[in-house]
Image (tube, rainbow over all chains, first blue to last red; front, side, top):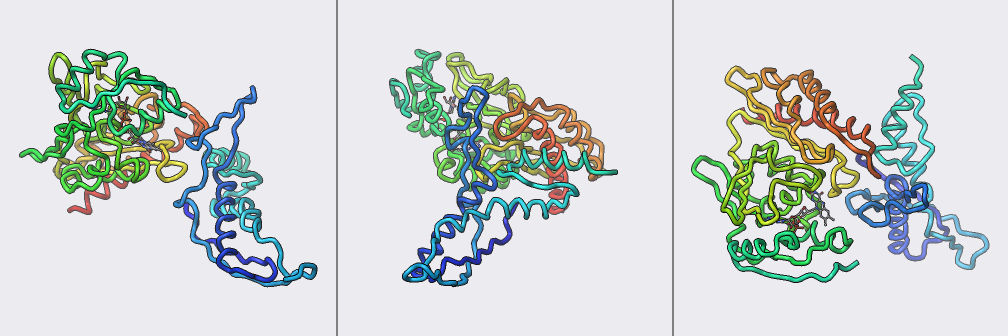
Length: 137
Length: 292
Ligand SMILES: Cc1cc2nc3c(=O)[nH]c(=O)nc-3n(C[C@H](O)[C@H](O)[C@H](O)COP(=O)(O)OP(=O)(O)OC[C@H]3O[C@@H](n4cnc5c(N)ncnc54)[C@H](O)[C@@H]3O)c2cc1C
């Protein structure tokens, strides 16, 4: 899989420090890529964590995070002195859902609806196979 | 975590290393690049009482090209040296292509060719590549030197034909035959991770343009790195069209004995082998035409 483009249009009210803000968004998207494709705690029936090291609990690395294009819409907050709003979370919150939509679109398999993350290759294989088996002739 | 206590030796020659190994065989481990052994010790999956560090044995590293074009690569040759070697690129393009798939540059700067082969991880690239290349491994022990063909070397999970008092000294690789093509493909969750499945292919065409010989090394789909023997022999005599590649892929998927783990079910591995073998065979065949 290759992420071909990633565009964020972001509104945190008045932008005070654009460099720090972009960094926050980059970090948020990276975390979102982790949520979308990798991060998953696997616990067995006895409650034992099965992936308690970074060898098995995967985080996105530099080669998994795309270049990110950023633009800002500034809608000043009415209730804060500088018109600012929080900027920390917006990068990561929509990421999982929109990758699910993008993967769904890229696969183009009729009846395949991705309602969960992380989208590991193994899970995608199962879901795609399930959708194909259920597809009407 | 930190490893349990161990005794450390740093011999300056192969003879010295072998003497130490002869004395302590069952309790001792050779330390090469340490990229598999040291993590295993830190996780306390391995607890050798004695480490014999062969990083100071210069005679164990280096790449030589023989008169017939074949390569002899010392066991301690670093993976990044193999990766950037023009000799390797010329004589064994398959090995050259596979190197960047091993871990990350930092690890290839320490990890050795011999270490990966002796470790015999079924998910590692090099054992499967060595099988597809028809390589031969040179081992030395108390009763002298012997050569072990790659397809008689890998037995099971991390198990090889090496006796506990033997060490791997060098690897011989035949020069790629004329009218041959190769490909290495694998699928991993992230670049640098151990692959969920991978395929190394060598194809040679005869004068009539049909396949004269084929070898397919598979990784991560069995307890040991393996050759897909049925898939390879099905390719022989064909023109290696897409349908032949698909036929080989189907056979390979039937030959493997995958297990499921956190990242891939056995079923998914079978699916990957079907896809990867087809792609690798097609790519290897196309590579022959490229070179005219
Ligand atoms: C984060 C990480 C990711 C990795 N990813 C990959 C990957 O994707 N693919 C991959 O193939 N590898 C991967 N590796 C492993 C790496 O390639 C190792 O370098 C290699 O498997 C072992 O080589 P080494 O020289 O480090 O051997 P060591 O760790 O020193 O030794 C490994 C074993 O082989 C034995 N041994 C070593 N040399 C000899 C010898 N000459 N004679 C007899 N016995 C010997 C040792 O006693 C030990 O049991 C990864 C490692 C790390 C840390």
